[in-house]
Image (cartoon, rainbow, N blue to C red):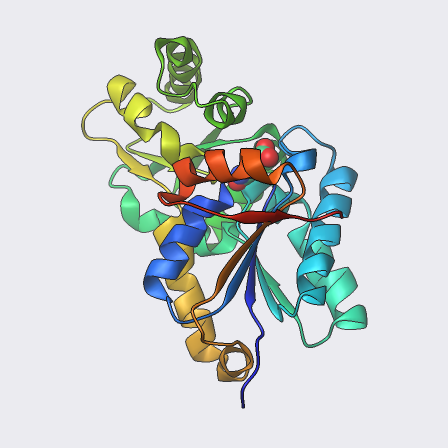
Length: 274
Ligand code: DGL
């Protein structure tokens, strides 16, 4: 059957593009719609209720564009809104739609990346205070110790393209010191914010050589591959014309310029009024 349905990929702003890039690499044939809620980002310090309300609005907008499946490529939204959307909204309003996040696929595999059974999680305040990672990781790897550090300055530094300057050193060092003071034996750092892959070169300047720095793009892409294999009824609904469309609630010209930093190639976005 020919149809034009797409997979929706959502983030508060640009970070989800780091995940989207990996998804396209693994699954290039599908049609996709990316939505960044740049006008209301960052989400990291917003309350639970606000993140839920904004995320739901964006998910419903993607549903209305013909996305039967939406990926929350944002840890903050996955931590604060996903469960409520899955449990309180989908069964009643959209029984045939699905929304997936980035936390569970990461928790399912992360134990394989540590030898010392000690992991440091860096994320936004929202993600860290939700305790989602310690709770989820415990389900799959009960022996793994998880320490967390919220890094509220990193998203603004990255979004303003200041993350690789010497000005970023103070915050990166401070966050890593705080993380290591909680668990000196940690050998794996999870970048639990989809913006953070851009700051890896700066992190590597301050990290012990043996530390594994884990970002989520490939993990989430692999998990989506499996999901579509296990749910052929969903895979069949989605068009396979390799279309990629980009929307932002912010200024599309600003989005186009900054987004290419995250996506690695030129993007032409359209504005959406949510
Ligand atoms: N990229 C988002 C995440 O993965 C957070 C950015 C924000 O604070 O809006 O958590």
